[in-house]
Length: 304
Image 1 (cartoon, rainbow, N blue to C red):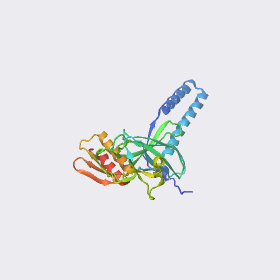
Image 2: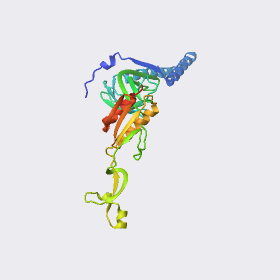
Image 3: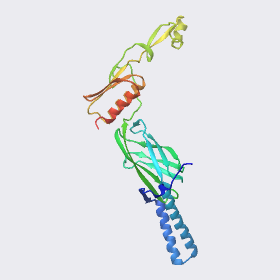
Image 4: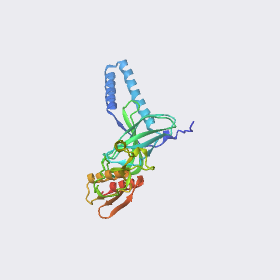
């Protein structure tokens, strides 16, 4: 059992409140019942009025206790792409013995970031891990300054929220779409270099005689049926193909997204990719995830 004190109850936390439409309607209804009770002197109306006032008081106290004593921790994803949902890991820790219910997570101050996540319960003295999604419309550098926890518990009469400073910078990569690679052309968003050595997975080059080192899966059985000789299929080796992607100094966002998509497609295919930005910046040929992230980072911040 965790050792929890009552300090959370007396902390000076900046908790803000706004009345919802439901709360406004219930308040007006309570006022009307009160006026009717005073004018008529009906004891039943006084009983109903007292019950309604009790519900409002309980709602205000419960919502205040519900939002207090919570500490959020946000984990940023390794890669974020424009116009694609980015999944953040949100852990909400409770330092009070009482559970909290219906906690929403929001990113304020950025009208172009769509994000909201609901935690149905945070156990008292425990923690709850959930996912919080955000969509960034454009590439570039974003700064998340604050995180808000909101609750409408228990009756939805009020919104109670707390703001937490997170001060996190994010680099949003360009949007990536599917690209069909053509290895028979001499140009692919720049200069395409490579050999036509024999290998696997590349373009079909022809047939040759079988050797004991060849795999059985490479045998061309149709030619064996016709000639009685074992022949194997030859393919061009894609290993060693180099792709130089050149991005002009006045490139538009659409051109940058196209360059990023082509770079990712070639890197996923195992090709070596280099990047030239304008007249100065250049990234040499390379492969792998680290090289891919370096290229995407340069494209994300280019001309901003």
